[in-house]
Image (cartoon, rainbow, N blue to C red; front, side):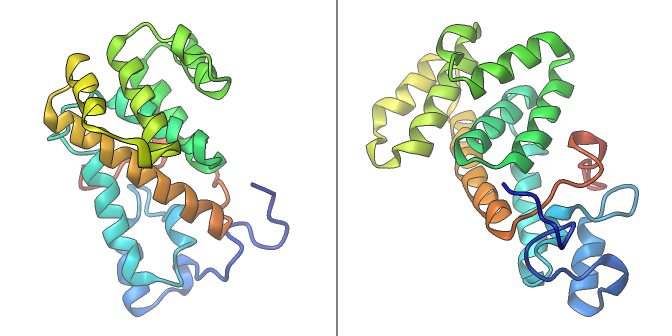
Length: 203
């Protein structure tokens, strides 16, 4: 995504927090972080205030939901890979950093992330669950018309329950949306990357 020389947030007109009123101000208040700031992700959506809170709620329901049986590191890894496939530098930076946070082993995490970028993950990933989930994410992202029941069976054989499989599917689909929304709006990275900014008061 090219650098934005005129607007530090997005390619469209953005209403900042201090200028927001009415419905937009309420939406910003609902999604602001613990430090009181709204991420560029949502500031870039200021032209569509009704979409901000539902988008945030859907994001939280998938990635920050104790009902999700997937380990947080795996959920972030899947999300990062979909962002890579869709070419969203913003999402790759944030969710790659989140993955590293949850792994708590930076050298290993960096090696695993590098394998996503250079497509060496089929031989680099050692965990069969990670390997099966990434393979599924690739197929659903790139050739969704080819999905079949056997793909779900492969995930079951790798140890995933149907709830976990449903979360994998929704994460892949969700990040296809986020990547296109971010890239379409030209959303720029803010000062904070990853979990330094994203924890939400409702978590």
